[in-house]
Picture 1 (cartoon, rainbow, N blue to C red):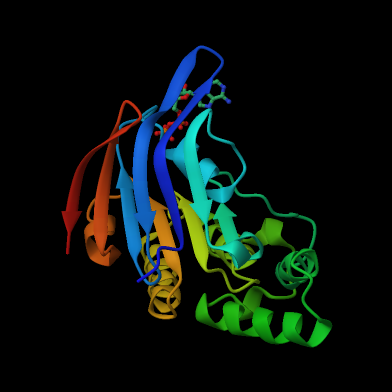
Picture 2: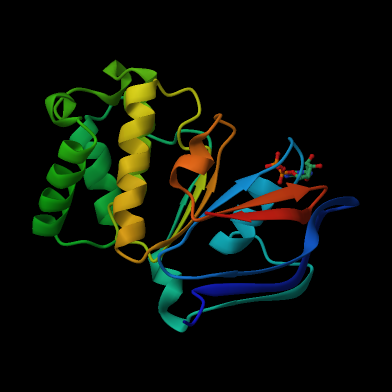
Length: 211
Ligand code: ADP
């Protein structure tokens, strides 16, 4: 099977601060790769390189030709418009992704149902609990159908039920052949959903476990 994207000996520094590499990695359709490691190990930097937000200083990042329009990156910090309704936040992202109005409506409805947010659809996002905001944050990244989904601690601070809903949706997209990288510090979470787990230490891949 052809990888969705590949890193070969990729190195990235911020000025004089080494952050990542050399790292080599292939990501395949339908795999959910867990990424763990201590703070400062380079996890966020790796996600940003995979998202195309940072260019490697050296080494190569190759991805399938058409992939660029099908990458969703979910940063750790929730980026939502708190004064806008839950539904309008999704409408905004659907517009950013260039979806037609009918597709935006259908996609929002489906995501709101899956993430148990339908009752909140017409309320301002600021009235959501922390766990609901985490769910809405994920929904915003899924207004498009990604082939590569990069998730930086999507369940951090979420209540257990919100975390379960988020993981179930990730499993749904994995089964649709999306490749995913998931950073998480929650005990047992990576083991629960990932098809393989990588450990980053001081910018390098230190270990791999497969399930
Ligand atoms: P992690 O996500 O594993 O906590 P990061 O990728 O955020 O690790 O950081 C890797 C290293 O790069 C750390 O030493 C961090 O301090 C440094 N770093 C991250 N972002 C920046 C930045 N914007 N400017 C300078 N140094 C940074």
